[in-house]
Length: 84
Picture (tube, rainbow, N blue to C red):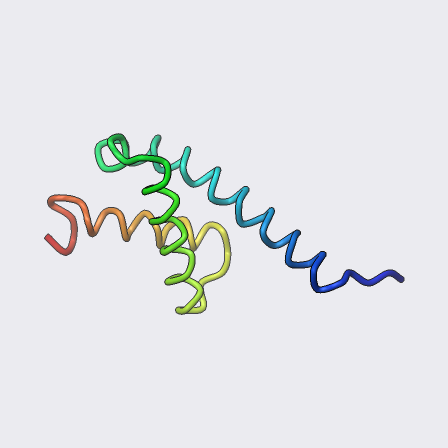
């Protein structure tokens, strides 16, 4: 049996997080074009990272649930969203 060093696990984790962010940028542009179309990629990534952190603080960790959480955040912030 082999073991991964903490540094290796952190690298895998960072790569998986980057992959998720990449997929979320594309997904959000497709799903919420009116909200995300004018955002820069840096802004989008910041929102996604914030959403990941907020979801994790609430015990939400599955990709599907984190995605739904981020979509809700963006919907709530959009004109006419739940918090409008």
